[in-house]
Image (cartoon, rainbow, N blue to C red):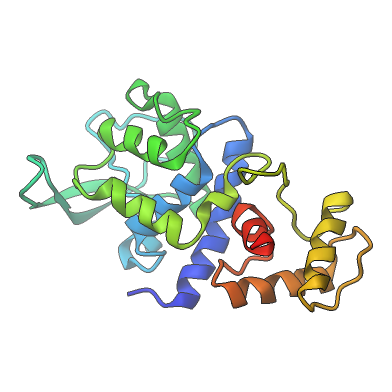
Length: 239
């Protein structure tokens, strides 16, 4: 079982890769990508998957189809469980894709979902439950509990904060902020942090002191400690 530190480290590794692919126009919500990677690789602790730089259980397939250029025909064999009738789990051995890097694994995931017509309902889906439902129903996974498992991971670790080019909450149009951000919203963030007792300058510049305050706030509120101010952190600041 992954430790809290391993979970947070893995999310910090995968999140920017997922966001980068999404911002290229591959409209599968980053929260879904991150949660599937967490689930399928046991937060990066699965030994075989780690050696293969594989964070998703994407099978080679009989046709060995290339959805893009990220997969270079590498593969590894491992046992897995499938549930074809919705009730009974069966152990099988199959070939799965291996990669030169974890970034390639994430890219191939996005290329596959955006390339295959059976996943088209997931592309552009505006909420994570709709997206993962379309992915599951498209044949990605056979586990009848898969949708609830992925949604639970997203909710537990507030992964929806990574969704969209500008992650927003339901009340205000607040952009994602991180170290290096500048402007009026950074000043709003700093003013809120000051009101909560954090010693930061309200100068509209997201520097080291603001980053340290954000991380400390995330620790105190049980959020993913990445220093990124997205949906979940904005909501917690407003609470």
